[in-house]
Length: 194
Image 1: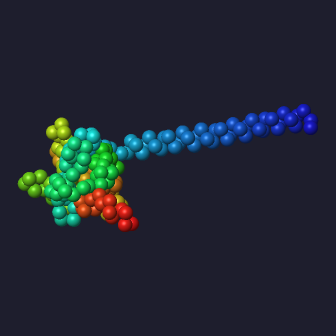
Image 2: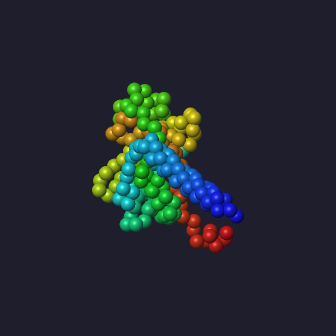
């Protein structure tokens, strides 16, 4: 090979290496930029220190269920003999740690279009109400209104004391779409027979 061909080949390899490196650096830059833009779009509707939660009452399918904490154990407040699956209840409580909203509707005049009714006692939600109590005597009342008509897995949510309506992913609402019978721990005999 001639010296000029070797120099050309080396220059081409270097240019190719720079192009490949530039591609990956650019790809990472735009991925980071997209994540930052996405994070900037979301708002935290509610943040709860879930390690301090001592009780939850929630409505589902026309009934209200109440879970309390005795020491480190979650129990059915209406039936102390029922043993609840601690992992499932823990998952339910963890879903409340931070409720993020993709959209915030600030002080809407007509909340009925989002699945809420104003009453003399406050707000009545179309779908569900979740009431949370913590050991430092903080109380949170979460109202779940209508599903978003364009995305059935997202719901409109209001928080007591906040006049805004938030559009949130329905992941946490699905955690509260269970009866306590569904959260009951399977007995040892049921596990042996399976």
